[in-house]
Image (cartoon, rainbow, N blue to C red; front, side, top):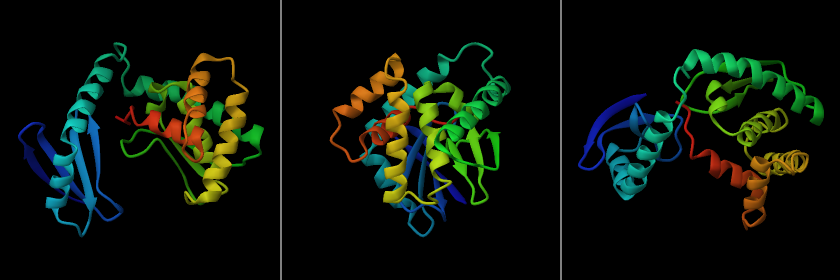
Length: 211
């Protein structure tokens, strides 16, 4: 992965990365690492700069929000503390959901990374990010069900989205009286998007970033 530093007049230092896996330009904001713009490997860095400039105000606000969330973390809530909590909470929850909906996976591992919330390998191994402990339970469950669905669908095609939406709808109906679940369900009910519950949760998760 290639990388260079760009100095933006408003945002300051921004890292421009070229990735062979990237299919489009994207921006990620981190309270400590700052702003990272990823561009497809064969695209010029200038496209990343143009993309950044068009979204400068969004990036500035996102950086402020990320800093506020980081400042609000309880004292002592370090990585090892989160890892211990994640190991205690996430594997049992994943096993419960898998048993309920008939999924079988091989192994679950808790990791710390900044690239994704979870992943599922072709061998049926599921990785979960310890930073899931920093998001509301309904969003945790969204990621767990997302990765379980990958046991049936390797990609994010129509079949994947249809199955995930069904799982989420059933799961949220079981928690209909719980405030956190109810708020997301209400937002989805007013959405006109296809697979509204999935899309609502996906958008909500963007307010958080793996750190």
